[in-house]
Image (tube, rainbow, N blue to C red; front, top):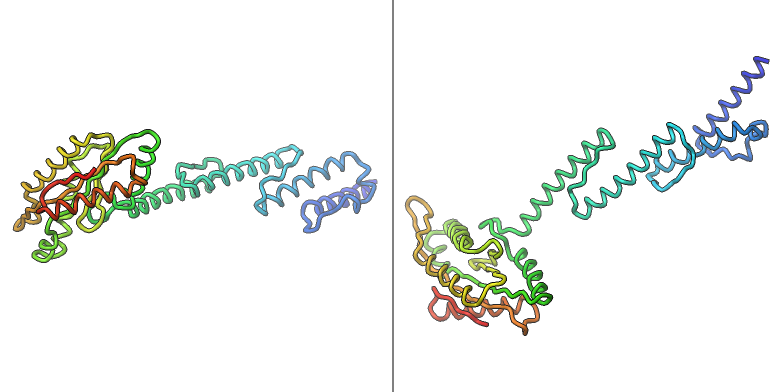
Length: 294
């Protein structure tokens, strides 16, 4: 009797080992009837098949397999499956630029994931700064201001929120480069840019547009207020000593062109074109002045 029982146990364990550990699936039709006729064995078989199925799909990275069985091991695998589904969603969020995602349910992996998210946020900010800021003057650049103006112009079309654009140019800047060298010219650009920026409100935008040109965007301000502000800036720059070194101080003037958006504008570039033409008129008429073109 003991030998028969041991033999049955060995057969059962061998079959269980095939079901859970074998490479090939053990189909129910190939299992001897002495086992399939036992309700207890069939319960065990179904649990083992669920365990095999969920572990196999997890191993292949498939996260949608559903099993009905319960129990400690199956529950842990289900929890892992749910965590991996959530992690997949978080990874997708990071791919869309949401670097605030953090993981706290996968042990050591959580630390690695969170470190990755922090690093990606740092790299993203660095790339954004490189893309949107002029490295010489540390001011926003043309790419940034063009993107901003698209938003401002769309706001104007939707709500009628007016805005003005001012183009600035450093007068006779080539003379500075020729007389003192381009390194001094770079310092002058940075100092003058920061000096002009200090006159604007936090709601305004000021950027280097290219070369020795700067641009300002002023929302919700009257024509008279813009003209008064820009005239004040031009006058102030004329009277400012820009200290380059202990032995070198430079004085210079700037010219400006102003324009405001109106109902005939097709897009923000037409406003820039008018401001740029007004700037050209300031240069043509002797520099060191402001011209307005509406």
